[in-house]
Length: 272
Image (spheres, rainbow, N blue to C red):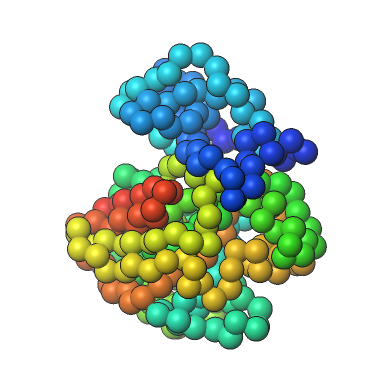
């Protein structure tokens, strides 16, 4: 599968104005007639876009029916970070301390609609509905006031976690980063206030998590700034921002969906 990683330039304002005045856009990466492109969702159709994802995209060609395309993972990150203990309703951490962090892997990521094939010995896998940040430019040692300019857009994500492994292993690598343990939505949503979005997780159609991102202990700007002190953030990198509420073990055939208002939904079925 072919992916594109494109360096951010200095004309981001053409596609990503300030949050307060931005028009909300939903950008997808899709395949149509064996050609992979980016496009903007407009109702039931896609307007193909030309140019560079993280700098400037412009409309090109005729619209295509959404039903006639295959939506792909929207980005190919070099790094996938995640924040733990970021909601009081789940597990809390001190707001005046650094955010608790761990890593997932790019190979953890799967698209909405794909089945999650659990490892045979994964007996205690829990859902964790989360907001996911998409980094839009190379950044190192930025302060919090600069951090919002580094965030290109957001996704809905599910930070699947094998709780038994999480408690027994030296690190959370197996528990958090196994193949398929990072479902993300197909649309990169640009222009929303990611500090004030309602997140809802459903298990087989029943609401099991629901909370606003305004209750995050460690806000996106703080997390991006902190990470950039130690790691060079690159265009396309992702940051899972932590889960609210309670979680529970998943069974074969369960369907988990994570919906974030204005952003989109990621939905996947569990397979053993």
